[in-house]
Amino acid sequence: MTLLEPPIQVNLYLMEHGANAIPNLLACGRALGIVGIMNDCFVAGFIMFIWVLGGKLLYLLRFTPPPRSTHFTGNRKAQMLPTKPTPPRRCFTDDSVSDPHSDILSRESINIVSLPTDLLFEILLRLPADHLYQRARLVCRRWCHIIHSHAFINAQMHGATYGLLLSPLKDYTLPLYVTADADGGIHTSEPNHISKLRFLATCNGLALEYDFKDYRVRLVNPATKQSLLVPRLARGVSYFVLEYGFAYSAASSAYKVIARYTVCHSPQTDYGLDVLTVGVNESWRHIEVPHHLSPFFFNKAPLTTEGFMHWGRGRYCVTLDVETEIITLSEAPYQYLDNNYYYLSTGRCVSLLVACGDLSWEVWELKAETGEWRKALPNVDLRAEKCRVQQFAPKDAPQVLEPLGWVKYPQVLAFRFGTYFSWKHWRPCIFYNLDTHQLHSTKLPQSYTGGYQAFLHKNNLI
Image 1: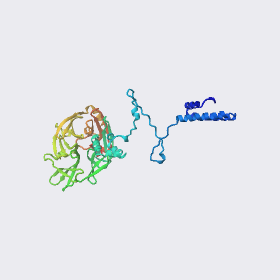
Image 2 (image 1 turned 30 degrees about the vertical axis):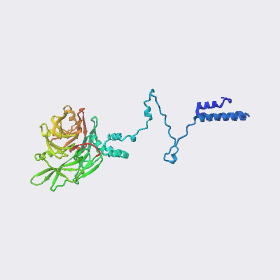
Image 3 (image 1 turned 180 degrees about the vertical axis):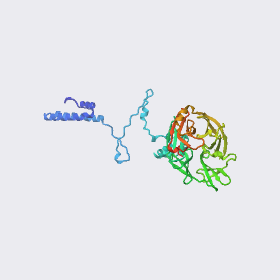
Image 4 (image 1 turned 120 degrees about the vertical axis):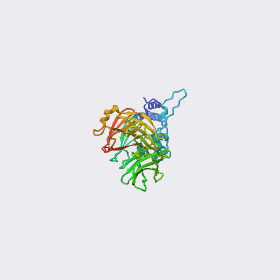
């Protein structure tokens, strides 16, 4: 570059090297100007200064960015803030090929806060009941309103899957909740509600507990830890309550507690059934039991299904319609020994497992409305797995494997080792997958050695 080049060359040099070249050109111009003045070349020095300054002005005029726009943010110190430049929209003609990613790039960022209520409703239904109550409802008001709505509570109750709630007869503070996933895998956990009370019955995620100190019955939700005290069963004569039951009537949307009691007086002992509608009244009502039904049929704890309560004894099953409070009697299709019949609740209906051989059972279902039995599933046959069953059995336990309950009907069935004429049960619990024919064993805590009960249960927000 010589002194006789026009200022436009400086502009081209700036365009090529950017703003980083401006300090170099200014320094060069000042140096050449000083040299020209020292050599008495005033004209050359003046031209050099004008040369460099003119190129700088042309560059600034050509590449000056647009003025910064402002917006009000509510804070006086942050009122003058630059806005992010909006990317240009890409327009396509009819004969042009559009970019498949252009629509995604032009959208605003989507997060869980901006989701529609219906979609958020479905997402929250996938969470367990205890997580919904203890964590999710505390996130924000919107989530809290959704979780506490009647529509969400009903949808969560019908969508929840059943599991087995195990409770030892010695130490009531160590219950276990056994569930099965979609593939039939067994998961054991401790309920959130740890109480010193004994479980009596369960229905739709609610449980009845009995307090031996004040002889009161409480209605508890193990997932939410909410409880309700049930009024006492007061009769004019001395009585003793033997069993409690708990069921739900969908027709009247009411929960009812059933108490089976005995009245002690001379010269005979009388039995009876009383019912209490929870939240409607404080008084118990008497249920008329048909005279041809012996108290022998009510010696076991009742099983709860949708709208019905069942007492199974041998080949006979007594059914109570919770809505009409009418009692009926049905007979099993086969006549075996009484200790070959096992009545288990599936939640929807009651199932009957009839032992037809060593480690083999037939599965039947009762249609409570008509009292008819039908064959529900193929036989549960564990004869091919007899060696593995013997490996699971403890040394001091008899080789009697009895059905305990359905963990996930009709996929997973639980068994336990026991005796026909004793309440003592041994701790190993076996789970059999009817689809994959796999066996799993779970060793229960030491407190389960003296015996334990199993209740069909599912967590919900009622």
